[in-house]
Image (cartoon, rainbow, N blue to C red; front, side):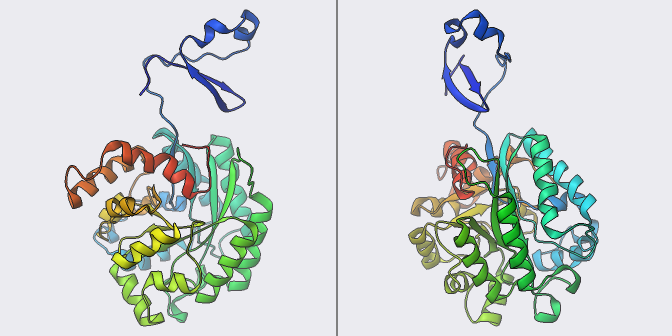
Length: 364
């Protein structure tokens, strides 16, 4: 921790941190500067949010699902979410990003997988709406092109009118990557390929999504091992546990991170460590839905990359990034004891850990 320091920022990059930096500048150089007095403030690295669903900011605290588990919660809310339109995407994105910025977050992703017929613009333009909002508010944004292709009639969870065909999804995902992904070091825009979950996309879509992401060198993301119901679904449908399914379709590796990761056994944690596959930990959401507690302390000890996430506002009720770091600390101490994890470690998860999951090396 540093006290009474000056921070010099040039062209949106921190150039120098030290004492009395102004004393070494000529008068004309000082005249060109905008000087902010932060003497009564704390300056921290920007926090990084590794999983969200912006559109859910419009459906917080819905009475009917206050005591529901994930599958029942999703089934009910899909009937509301299938009516969202592009205007809803704009305002929900602005609300979510605004809340993140107010709580110290400077880099976020959004796992948007919902593409109902109510949109009045092309699917790729949904990404543009979000990128435009992010640029207007000034946050670095790694949007996902999420997807669902397996509806109720196919044995999945979503209703028929919010899913798309595998071909349509892959075609549009490639367009979004080509239009918006900026791989440069100081990029403000990245794209992540993100099929929704094992119970809402086909195995073939998972395979092809992996190929597409690796063709363009972008990250992969999905929900995985969030609930015991998901584990049972995969065993019944595919004859194997969720992580074994991901291994089969090669949706695993250091370019991949999963949201939640609660129901991994010891052998699976070893596999995640070996492959350097990451986990976006969502403590408030997991508590809210009673899903369970991710084994973050053990994951960290094994070297599994960890980031922290607020998750969607319908399962959190807020996008308080700083609060999510606190929840991570407290929830892990509930599971492992008061000496199991400290604030510095959690802060690392919430900054450089999350940035690494999203593919940024100089953020956090």
